[in-house]
Amino acid sequence: MLAVLITLTAGRRNEFIDCQKAKVRIAVLPVMDVKTRWNSTLELVERAYRLREFTREWLKNPKYSDYRPLFTTQDEWTLVKYVMEVLRPFRYWTLSMSKRHTVTLHNVITVYNDMFDHMDGVMRALAKKKTEWKEDLFFAVKCARQKLSKYYTEVTPTTGMLLITAHILDPFRKLRSFRKWDKGMDINPEDETSYTTQYQEAFLKYVENEYCAKHRRLPVIKSDNTLNNNLSSFEMASRSGQSSYDPYDLSSDDEEYLMPTNVAETTPGRSDHAARLLTAARLYLNSPPELPQNWGQINPNLNDYHSDPMAISSTFRLPDITDWWRQQEETHSKYADLSNVARDVFSIIPHGV
Image 1 (cartoon, one colour):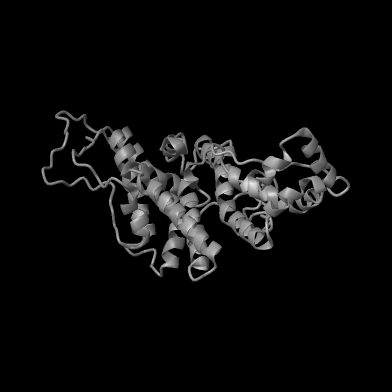
Image 2 (cartoon, one colour):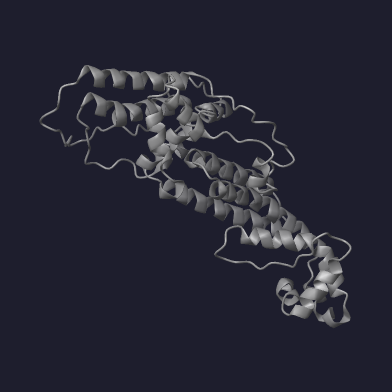
């Protein structure tokens, strides 16, 4: 409300700017909340918190004495600070995904899991608090997590496989994230039920079914039955160790498949290409993640969601996975055949999934 009152007229705006002279290099005004703009609420509370002393100074003017009861109390400022900490990771990832001038599909799983972990941490911290505003904030975060879960579970199995494939095709990450999940739950990554093994096998089946079969001139088997209609069985439930969902399990009760009657014989060239592609995929998975060259050190004081991710990334060079895959293709490396898969997958934009 005070933001509206301060910016209501040119005279009031000038008086507020005068309160900042000789104290700051650039004077600014309060901002309004815009429902249709990402991170607008966070920007509003951050600006209000930043200008709180100048707002107090502006209210000392006798003609604005009626507005003084609207000024935020110390307890309310504490709540504002907590809300800012809750919202900052959301801004970090929305800016990170929207401002990058390269592919971002491989980051989708990371973003979702980071958001879930963040909200779970906030809820754990507030779970036993009895202060009214903390109980209200706990309820708000709980609702936000439920909404994010709803979006997450609406992803189809086919889309889920694309997200997993894109994540693995990040040469600087590969299976590292899934191994981390296994470690966090005391699961041996080599176990059949581990995330690492499940996703590694799913990736190899994806390459074999979608690419090798074409080179071998093999029929593509299609099933009329609908697979599980959300990613949770493959991703979220799997993280809880409750699922071994196979996106290429095409078994069904009626076994009604579409089978071509005439299949061309395999030629040596096609067979060799399919074999090379599978070999490249296995070599890629069995080798450690790549180490970015000249990546530099991330300043931990910047990499804490308080800054624009573009400002953070300007302090060091982020690895570009498209450049890496292009180099594999141009130099005819051992992963050159796999670069075609990477090109196809990374041509998909995240909001198109």
